[in-house]
Image (tube, rainbow, N blue to C red; front, side):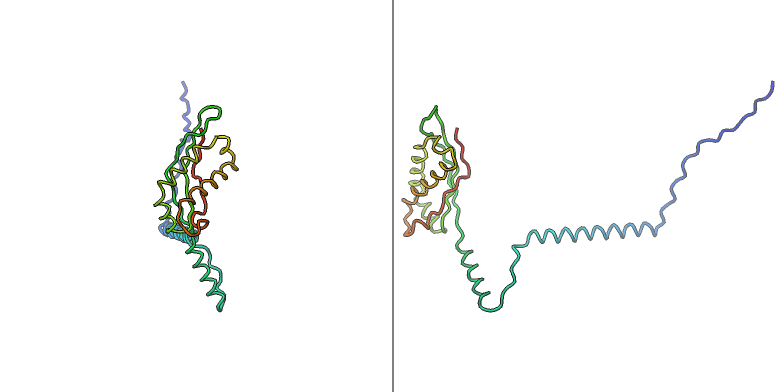
Length: 183
């Protein structure tokens, strides 16, 4: 028999490994990465500072008008309202198609701390009168926005009767509802 010629097949060779990155190339990558990190940190810091800064101050005019403007700003800052959160009220409402109740959180807006102290001194009486007022309402009377506004005005009127201040209009400015649930 004849000898079969053996043909050598080329063997699959493994891919050649990537040439190593020269040290100088690695240094450039590290320097570029560090520069990018510093740039991003600077941008983030500037954005944070911009977000934290108070309102931009307008340029100050020369002369007396600038001084008068600053005096008016100081007076406005002194006349900020004070807010007093009251305990949550839960009352039964007047019957209308079944039993309903109201749960509400009320905040008084008053002119200053002195008025707040006067209201706190009268709080048991004011709270009692408010409970009577709230429980005298029907659900249909206070469901609409207009009904809620009227209720707030009624609460203001009732509370002002018990605050002993020369100018009751300035003492209790407003009544705000933080929560208002009718069930």
